[in-house]
Amino acid sequence: MSSTSENITEAARRILRENDRGGYTVPTAGLYPYQWNWDSAIAALGFAEFDMNRAWQEIETLFAGQWETGMVPHILFHKPDAGYFPGPDVWQGVGPTQSTGITQPPVAATMARMVYDRDPAMGKARLSALFPKIRAWHSWFLKWRLDSENAVCVTHPWESGRDNAPEWDLVLKTMTAEGVGEYTRKDTSHVDASMRPTKFDYDRYIWLVQQGARLKWDQQALREQSPFRMADPTTTFLLLRAHRDLLAVGERLNLDVTGMAEEVALLEAGARSLWNTELGSFDARNAATGEFANCMSNASFLCWYGGIDEAGQLEKLRASLTKTRFPVASHPTDSDRYDSCRYWRGPTWAFMNMMIGFGLEDCGHADLAQEVRTKTAELIETYGFAEYFDSTSGAPAGGDTFTWTAAVWLAWAGSQAKGTL
Ligand code: GLC
Image (cartoon, rainbow, N blue to C red; front, top):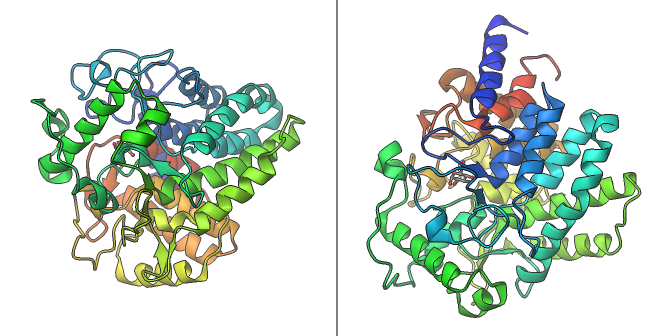
């Protein structure tokens, strides 16, 4: 390892330690002061590089917030923090820990499997204890969130993890946000407003939270009343992959996996249904109307991670690797809706690249995986552990000293510097 990459690795470990609040990490101090669902799963993979016990603990604290229904919240508000809005009083979650009422893309099973693979003897008991909890979460998705074609839906843009992606405009623009009332945003006091969602979008996000709280997060009521229900490629591909991984570890640990193979097949059919032929890409779809959003995103490129090797998507990837200096852009750089810094409308994210890279590697596209990895490593080496990066210039954006960017360096991007490739 060169001394530079050694320093970066040291810095990455330090960030995980410094963002540790005792059993869970915050994504970054200030902007995101709580435990976020998919951030934590990625953090576990980073911790597994130097502290296995801490890696397991990260996933365990996440599942300590699981609701009776099986849902695992997108944020757990372990300790109050006045610097964040909307907090627990607005969400009115009904779980064992104060939380939001929505979930996030299910990455935990896959990361738990990867952590387990690093030390099966140590991980066996930890993973066996987590197995029924993860399965309950996946079952909750299967019960409440499939659209008519079995793709997995989100009921709030934030639930997709790609908070302000252009896909959601399709439905948000039809909503009025009437009665949302006065509120004070906190995100724009931490980072520049040009990087954050607009007021138009934010009003609708808050309106949806208020509606969910009013309905006590009852999924049946939400299904009937919420204007926002969109089949989402991120959640669909990630659940598909997570369920495959959970089935594999269940078999390995001799646990009850009844029905899981059929569920994987169902989810795979759902994922394939998100192919938008006209666009030549996987896409999000409005569950109410069947209308596609007509947007390719970095989530479209998670198909391989879900185990779907789609030739048309591969063509799109090759093209975008030529066009975009720092792939994979969250929205195509040549689209008129491309925004280089407003987060899920253009920039690139190291952890999404890692999952895309894992998928490409699994499906035998090692050259492309390598290219995405090298460019991600270059970003981190040059600009540090930013929340995300401008995919045209590479400029760091959003929060810094970010947990998942540090974890990605440790578990994936930095490993070429360590000579493992
Ligand atoms: C932003 C991202 C979301 C992430 C959270 C914490 O809201 O859009 O995906 O989980 O920040 O990092």
